[in-house]
Image (tube, rainbow, N blue to C red; front, side, top):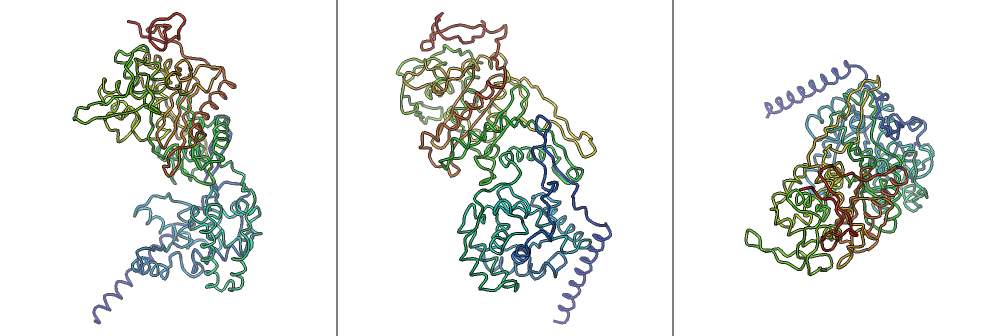
Length: 625
């Protein structure tokens, strides 16, 4: 037994020695850089700043003297009661967390101190790895050996996240209560301190019941620390929430969906890390505030009385610049970027890619198939019985032009099986879309992706076959003005120019009511003053629309986050109305033109319903023999 005790003491002494060595190293490296000069500035296409990182917000940083004592006591009580006693790591808290995690499988508990959280906020990304944990631990030691506790706490409360796109206690006080951080009372302070642990779950703007429950835990912690008594606790719980009637901060939060997309791109390019951020980053983007306002207004106007969500993206053909983007209707409620991260079935918006292949293989606008209920026997001896919208059929031959105009499913599947299902799957995969299954239903859009990727595909059609991946970042410079990155166009001729032009002319048919016979032309209700290509798509759970001309491309999606079926007629039209708003805005602010056929293409007027030559018919483009 004595031998075991001696071994145990030796191990403890060794660990203590190692820990002391790390503290000495941390101290010898000098005072940590608090990154007060570190910044991230995003510029729009007019080189005006539309976002700058929280560490550089003039007037938003507050000293402890300008923060309510109630909030300071509350945040310490709930996040790190022993903050003023430990040296960055709390052994008692760690042992308590281990005990809870071992004895209660339904409840987990962390043991991060305020200093550790501050280190994470200042220096580190959210990457989950042992490497990150080691760096966090070392930075914690560096903070503790060079700063006093009040400096650490002050830095922490100015950087911590309160949800709704809000960082820092001053912003939070203004946003939730319409007052300064110094004016917060016990009720308001205990509520905000509770929000920090889970901004999405404990925000009183999202769930008042959950927020009150969390506030009670904060008040109990204050009692444990002898900062308040039970009478004060009961008085708070009986009082109103006292939330502001309007929730505002200086930032335009709607821009944050675009900002988040830029940061994702920064990460992909390798510039969103301490090596570059500590130099100060000026990021010149393709952001166009005019188009952004159109998307924001459309989302607000068309979804205000519904739980439905929407996302949209605007791209400039040929350059592939992303001019505007929203990932949801309200960033303050949900920061999830549906434009780039929500993978949903794209429905009939896949059909232009299918018809591109058809035109490449001898189809023309006049090509016809019999449209009637059809059961297809597939190569594996199974059967497939697709249906048209509302089970409506022409019961006669229809042209490719009309099939596009009304989004006929029978025509699409016949084309798909005629060409071979592998061809469409292969084309979609060229755009880096994963998990594409080569089957009969692929012609109707049974592939999951987001509108960011969808716009990337359509942009190649809109750019006459030239591929450049859509992007937001033009140039990156540091604080010294050194150019760290400059965007370079790839200009890859991925698709045939003539075929893309022929297809674009065909996609104008969706606006033409001439085709509204057994089914309505999908965009016939929306008449514009200029020529545009458009394709819509729908499933039981999603509605999409993509439209373009040589000047602009817009893609929009609408649906429910919980995959409820789309039933409301108004909800189903949100995507269509949004693309029309963008097209109209473009027509009002630019000299919009239409494509010109090459020398390999001839314009021929046809009867749109039969495909026969008709000098009084609709003009489509045909490749010369």
